[in-house]
Every structure is written in C-alpha cells, then in structure tokens.
Amino acid sequence: MLTLLNIALLVVGSAATLAAFGGETWRKGTSPIFERITARGWLSLFCLASALFLGVAKELLGAKNDVAARAEADKERTSLTDKLNAAEEREKTSNRELGELNEVNKLIRKQLDGAQETLGTVKVNLSTTTEALNHESAAGLVSTLTTSGLLVRDMFLYIPLTNKVNSDHDVRHILLPHFNRSECDDLVGSEVDVRIVKNRSETLSYDSDDGMTTHADLQNNIPKLDDVLDLRSAPNPFYFQDVLALTGIKTHARSMYFVRFHPDNLSASQVYATLATTGIDIVEIGGYWPKTFKTIQDYKVAAKKYPKVFKDVDEADLPDIDVDLFDDHTSLMPGDCTEQIKEYFNAKFEGGELIVLLESQNKDSTISGQYITMFFRLKAQPVKETKDGNVVQVAVPFRVAAPPTFGAMDASELERYPVHWPQESR
Image: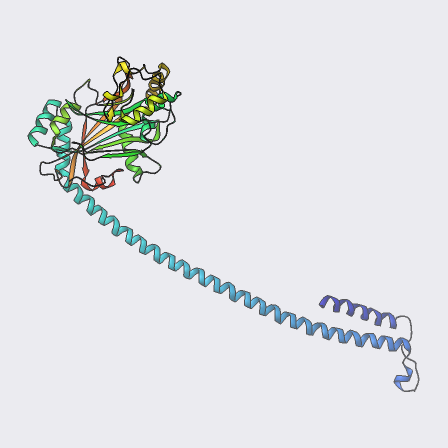
C-alpha cells in the first residue's frame, strides 16, 4: 500500500510541476482571484492538493504499520523469552535428576561393595577346599573324597552339536542322520550309554519314530531327564555360553544334547575313580540295527513292510513287548547306511562336558550354601563299528580329555538350570 501511495505522490507532484512549467497559472488584473486563475492554474492547484492528501495518508499508514511491527516484534520477543526460561527450567530439572541418580549410583555401589566383601568372606572356606582339591593327585583325591563321605547329588551331561551338518531339533534326529533308505530310517534305533561308575552304566534309548525333544524317566534306579537345549530359546543363554566355553567347542550349531542324572547315595569317590581312569569310554552315542521293537505289533508292521529284512522268525516265540531279534533273524544293515552314520558322527560330535555336583551325607549343601562341583571335559573318539552276526552297532565314544577341575555352585543356581524335574525326588 505504501508503495502505491509513493507512486501516486510522485505522479501528482510531477503533474503539478508540469502544469506550471512554461505557462501562466493566473492572469494579472483587479478581478477576483478565482476569476484570474487559468485552467493550467486549476490543474496545478488540484495536483498540489492531491499531493498534500497523499502525503498525509502515507504518513498515517506508515505510522500504523510501525505500531503493528513493534507489536509483532514485542510478541516474538516475549515468546522467545518464555521459551528460553522454559529451557533453563528443564536444564535445572535435568541437572537435579542427574544429581539424584549419581547419589543412587553411589549408594548401590556402596551396597554392592559390601555384598561382595561379605560374599568373599563366606566363600573363603569353599575356595580353600576347591583349591586344595585341584592340587590333589588322583589317588589322593579318591582318598579325600572317601574320607569326606561326599555323595553325588546330580550329574549333568552336555554334548554340543557342531554346525558342520544340519539336523532337526528332536532327540532322535540329532543323534542320527536322516537316512537315504527308508528301512534304515525305520529300523535303526539310537541310544546313549553313560558310565556312572566302573561296572554300572545308564542307557537312554530312542525309537526311530521318536519325535520328542525331551524325555523323563523318574522310575529308574537313577532318575534322569534328557532334552535338546537351544541357545535361541534357552531361559539362561549366559549359562549356555558358559557350558560351551567349558567344552572348548567353537563350531557349535546353537543346540546341544543334555542329560541330567539324579542319583541317590552314590559315592563321589567311586564316580571320580571311574571318570579319572584313562582309556575308558565314559559316554557312547550309537545307532544299532535292528532296533528294539516296543511291542510285537510294531514288529509285525515292520516285518510286513520289509519282508526281505526279516527271516525265519517264529512270532510265537517273541515277547509281547521289547522285541529284540537275534542276528540270524535279520539281514545285515545296508552298507551305505553304516557309512552315513559314520560320516554324521564324525561331523556332528567333537566333545562335551560332564558336571558332577557333590553334597554331604545329610543332603545339605556342602559349604556355605554351595555345592562342590567337578568338571570333566570330554573328547569324541574315532567312530567304531561292532558286529554280532547281523546285529550291527556304529558308535562314537567320548573319553575324559583332561584332569577334572573343581569349583563351586550356589544352591540357588539349580533353579536356573535349563531343565527341571517334573517333581523333585528329594
């Protein structure tokens, strides 16, 4: 608007000047003034009056705009001041909260230091005990464990699987491969044999159609549980990683075969004497032909499906359950199935860990609410094949790879183990 007024003012001013330029604007004489003004004069007067009006209007509008601009500037200045004050207040609040957090952190550190100091005092006897055990000779340890009367509370077997061969997640199909022949898939059974003491082993058997990932046998003399542990779904992945570190296996497939034994009144000295003996297979994972049939009906179904495998079998002589066939009643396992098992065992198993928890005879934790613990690292041995006529077993044995180490485990740690008893037997 001001621009238009300025242009109009220039126009009328120029017109007034041009109107008076080079001519008379009024006549000389004694006539009244208005009669003596010429047309050029009236035009000049009109332009001058217009210029005066436009000039006054311009100044009034400019004054109004200045007032509005000052008001907007004051409003913006007030808004910026409010924002600055709010920011300063937030900074003060943040500094105050940071100071409070620092105080809480100091208090927590003080409490943690106190707790660690107390824990160190509580564990001094246990540390001394485990250190002394680690420096004992094998013969001395047997004598020490016998004298102490310590018992085995639990035994934990961990066999990590390497990532060199793909496998399923149920127990049967991590222990044996998927065969190229259907008769081998159906008729080869799998079992895991664990030596507890010198003349006593515990065997876990799995049928060819067993698709379970976990099993519980609480009625045996030594109750036991097995499971396939998966790092991606384990409730305590840090413990999973600790076990892998103990085994020393690097190329693991994020899963492992796990068995927990829960013996009663088993002498720690006997277990140690067995596990510390060199040249003994402590664990053996195998596939055997033909499998044990759960019922006579299971056998009949298999015999009908594979008539060339079974021969000269008088079904009247067979029991109703747990049907085992002698070597002269079956054909030999196909050679390619045998080789497939060997290749799988060599690629899938490298080693493992056997952890033994000890307790006093009164079933209480040994020292200060903790269990003395023995750690045995296992190493897979060359795969072996045994034949008894046409009965064939292919197995990968595991032996103790180094002298055991002794440590301690809090009683509360048992609650964090990946597998629990459906109901504790004690």
